[in-house]
Length: 614
Image (cartoon, rainbow, N blue to C red; front, side, top):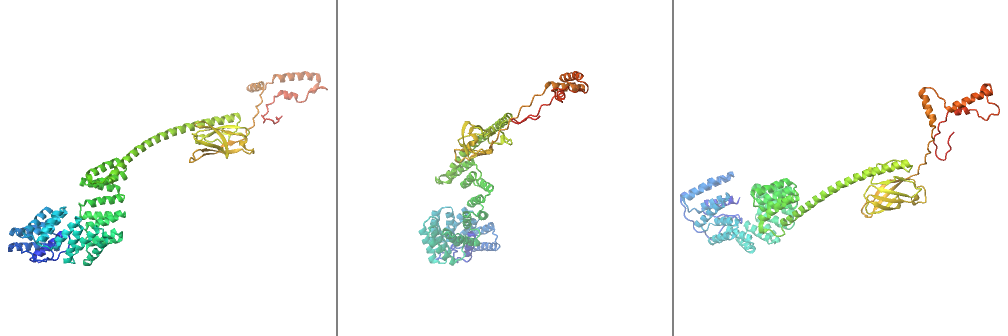
């Protein structure tokens, strides 16, 4: 934009045969302002050269109306004018402006220099040449060019403002303010002077004066974008963020491609973690200036802040490929590797690359150095964690194997104890539990309260035991081995009452107060011993054998004793007479023979102490 304005003013100046126009006041501008003394007479120019020059001016104005500039054709026309008369300093100046617009600064500088060699009083050429030198950091050379130009024309506002701008960059604030003030004394409406003074006061942290100068300048030009931007910076420093943002937005409405102002908006967005707006602003900056490295880095930071880690990573990787010697890209890759990708080894590689490229400019407490230390600590911690995980897995495997062994042993001991109680008539619980699922078992599984009992607790690791309780009754215990406790339970559980039958909770409390106790609900069964069953009567083996034999032959074989009795009865019948009646005075009882014929079955066993049946 500056280059086109310079061309317009220059062409207007030359087309009007040297009539000066009022400067637009830009500190880096190259326009002509009013002077207090008459300029030296320019060299005589041939009519042919002047006509060719005016034709080039006409071509420029025609292109300006369409908005499409053909710089190559314009260069050809101005160079044609120079061929007709090499003393045409204005043609050199305009060619320099075109080359500057084409970003060919070296050629632009050559033509500005030639223009000043022909006409030392051509202040716009000095202003533009000085601006080129200042942009390259050659501030002293730029000042020398300005001073030479002022020796020819002591009050040229454009040159003076450029000098004030260089004093500002050199932090010679007083000289900058005096030079800009001299311009305002001559031209109170010079907006460029207000811009420089406001910026100088802002850098001096004199915010009140900076604010006042901004407001005064805006009375001269109420929508000046640079004054609006400086006012926004002042308000931002005063912690008036919404008001500052409003001024930045106003400035961008006037000049959308003000990169510095867009940076200010993006910075506010980053500070307030509005990464969407920050990304938009950095994208716009890169549209206007694709090679803006700061904007490219800012875009990556916005992507990272928005949580799009992969996009941020790819963006910074692309920057390292595009700008291999740009240190900051490696720094952010290191941060992403350490923080988001959990890759401390890769982060160390990028931190070291950043440090190598940055060199001695880095302070000793820079984040890169602390990042390397943190990454190394993370590597050591990860190694330690992996070792701990390995040991934990091995311990878990060992514990699982131990639990299985203990579960198998609990099951076997419990089954053996249960079988023994059944065989010996001991006390048993009403139901058999699954010993594999219990934390520990009690052996025997149930007790009689009528006697003092010694009970084993087996099946888990008993360590640092404080006490063992049956219900609320504390009992004595002794640790037999790592997995076995022996508790002593007194008669009737040490209670006066004998109503102690049923399930009792078993609770084990540890010495460590932070370890929860283990409670086996209903783990101990207290019951009565069952009454002993009598042994069954022995059967007559001979009778059984006789019955088996008679059954095989299909007929009943009388036992020898019955036959003898029958013979005896037959002999007695002969003596007694008919009907087989007993003689008077006999002691036998009716039915004796029948009882002798068939042996009796043994009676059912009865409970001890009860009479047997007939």
